[in-house]
Image 1 (cartoon, rainbow, N blue to C red):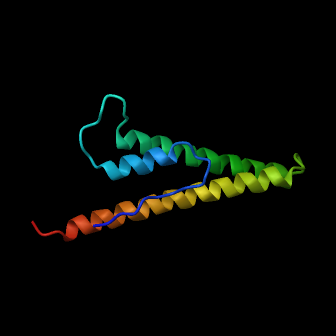
Image 2: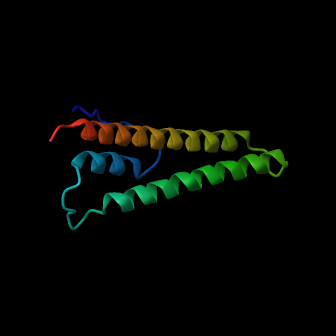
Image 3: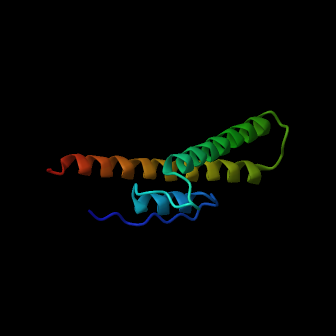
Length: 105
């Protein structure tokens, strides 16, 4: 099974950690590393925060509380890119799980 590396140009700081830890496997956790579930939980929290921030900025723009279209568009674009990255991680995890299920013992 060949899994290509996930490259992201998004400014998410934890995304490279998720991709590198996902490819290492489920071996024992070193003393300086966090468990995969903890990394994913933090990553999901970050994405949720970006989605909420984008929604809040769109609402503020619609109500006339802010005039910065650039900030609103940038926030929505960052949230969209983060969500797409999350969906790609999910798709690869599902694909890997299905391939493991197809293996004969």
